[in-house]
Amino acid sequence: MTGRLEQFIKNQGFSVRAFEISIGASDGMIRRAIKNNTDIQSKWLSVISDNYPNLNIDLSLIHISEPT
Image (cartoon, rainbow, N blue to C red; front, side, top):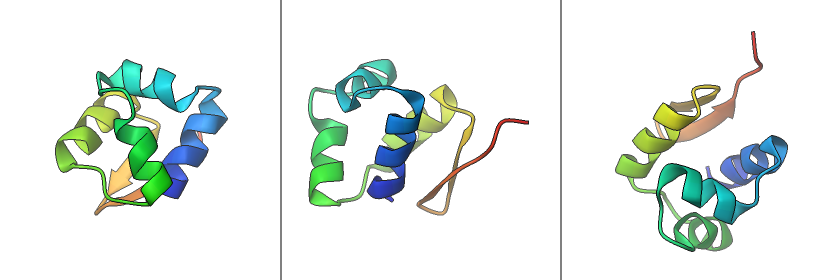
């Protein structure tokens, strides 16, 4: 999951820190999850989904959807 999130962040042209700021996460919260390949809490998945509707979060899997 974190690998796809990292890909999404890069495709958006953000740094991981800029992405963290955009969702109101603390410094390193997403970066550590990506680095350690660990889960992201469901509350953060909800915030990410609300802020990035083109990112489809389904059953703990992240899929990048093409703009329509």
